[in-house]
Amino acid sequence: MEHLTLIKVGGKIVEEQEALSRLLASFASISGRKVLVHGGGRSATAMAARLGIESRMVGGRRVTDKAMLEVVTMVYGGLVNKNIVAGLQAAGVNALGMTGADMNILLSDKRPVKEVDYGYVGDVRRVDGKSLAGLIEMGVVPVIAPLTHDGKGSMLNTNADTMAGETAKALAAYYDVTLIYCFEKKGVLRDENDDESVIPEITFPLFNKYCDEGVVQGGMIPKLENAFDAIRHGVREVIITRADAIGQENEGTRIVG
Image (tube, rainbow, N blue to C red; front, side, top):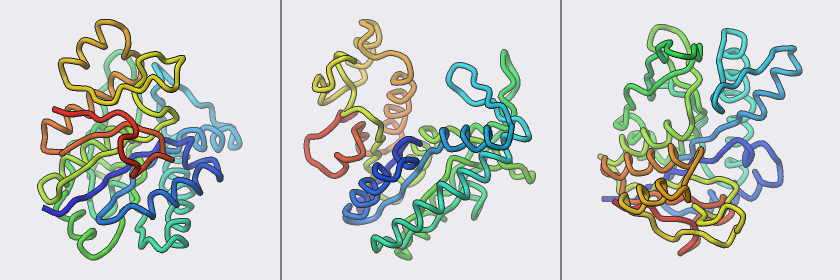
């Protein structure tokens, strides 16, 4: 089975020109089939402020009312996505910018109201791996913004980590998939104050042990849960590392089943 690399990058990396330039160069140098899923939260917050729209966060998650949905659709699907696509085209990568609504690639359900009403936020229901694989086989490199749709005409703001994991799982039926989550640290750290304390490999029993010991906490827990879910659904490996370490051997933390 042919290999495919799916990279997920956070907003900070794609929102700062210097970091974006390094990312585009690293991504362009990856051989074989590839897909990029990106964030863009800080750009959305900044644009909302310029438009006089208040950003509301609950537990680190954005509340997306009608006005904010318009902002994230503009920023994620337009400004951030097309800047990446233009940069990749300049680097010789035939990128296609898209949201989950394009070609009906990612369909979501609007998150039900429980303790918090998150508004127009989507929980992924289905990824059309076959159609994505068809694009990829044409030599296209999909660049996917963190937006899905409900099939009823509404866009939905959707967590980029989840979108990357679900997309990797859907493509695992067609490719030997490596999923790489890029963020600002070198990997999962044994000591959050020591950037060199990277844990090279985490199995599921080790993950539970590190959670119990408080080594893994906060936002890293759902990131690792997504990683193990991807492994269980056929993704070959998940790597958590820095964007400038993409493609380098023995860098970052490798998640194995």
